[in-house]
Length: 539
Ligand code: G1P
Ligand code: ZN
Image (cartoon, rainbow, N blue to C red; front, side):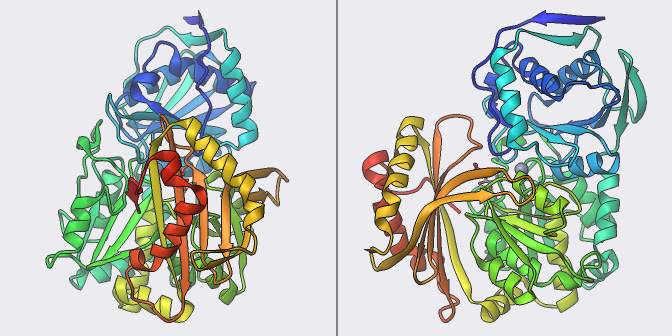
């Protein structure tokens, strides 16, 4: 029953910020998934006795890829697969399953917040036994393997039925199909005070949660509507669809437009939130009010005492370098550890495992904590609801009080998309070469304090990672430049801007960041090099 199939390498199977992410049509090429999976199995080595999780966000091609992975795992000697019913699992729930079952790793089929469908994107994220995505040392080895692959192993058997809960067997491998929602719900109940949130809803509190036709719909309906008592219909776009109903499942002001329109209208409920395709990103809104992810991270950290799981104290907090420095001020006030890491959740894993941090987050709508090793969209929503329930204050009041206490980091991200890889690489290389000459200079009214690449020294494994270029100014403002590592074609230049204010707290970010944006465009010569006068997406 085990077949060995001859194959030839693809040269583009390098994993980025979060796994392998490509256009669906590229992944659908013959042997593409098989080559990649065999390279992972080859890199792991002996698979006897090993257990892995498999699931996905339900996007187009999930069903086909899952069957391939199952048959290949069996042929390669994996002992057991745990699979989400009908092939569904959110990224945070997947991380939890790996930890709970002490599995050796897992495969979540998702291109996260990227659009799905035949003309959209597909992806495979590989987590190891930490429950977090495999570190670069391993993904580099896998990439080397993909470049030399000659054959793969697969069991020649019919597809298995993924709808049936319970155990079955395939080619000598055990398969356990689990309800992807219930374990996750139990974990949330252990972290948060569900009764407090129930009371909030019982007293007439209203919310809308937009699942963007992606994986979190069933989780959100179960938690917010069925258990916590939010009004029926509070969760919208709740049925996961293979093409996300044409939505771009990225919870931000641009792509979660319906939710944003509602929240900024007179019909707004008290609270609004959205999650992305695979459930690890979140956006938080109040009535006519948007909380930046950087502020959200700072506010959650500052209010940890309201959460039963954290009330006795938290270890520390971490953010990606591109995220605003707001949480740094909270860490200082609470006298807890504070770390800055490269972009990508995998860099938080060692800090969590070594108990250096409890909470962490990124500007890209990701917040989470050490209950798992991925960011967690629904966790962030429950955290906000808990703070609202405990303080009786609105999202806006909570945020403005935070700014009054700590000052405000006005913050925005500007993305220049669809640049040729060559142009983008040259822009970054030339800019890096120019950084030393900027030190001490005045640019557009800003005096440069330090201009240097961001280099991270992991305190646990000693590895060193360079990610992005940072220009810090004397007044606490910053520009961070980096290239996206999650695109499926071409390059995206991300420019992150931050300005710290203690007096003017209620201005529009665009206005506050106008001067620094001009400086950022000039320093990197963005318009002359890319032909773009403006960013394509601003978040
Ligand atoms: C983007 C975000 C990053 C996040 C990643 C996966 O990566 O910027 O914070 O961890 O998606 O969700 P990028 O495209 O910038 O490499
Ligand atoms: Zn995601």
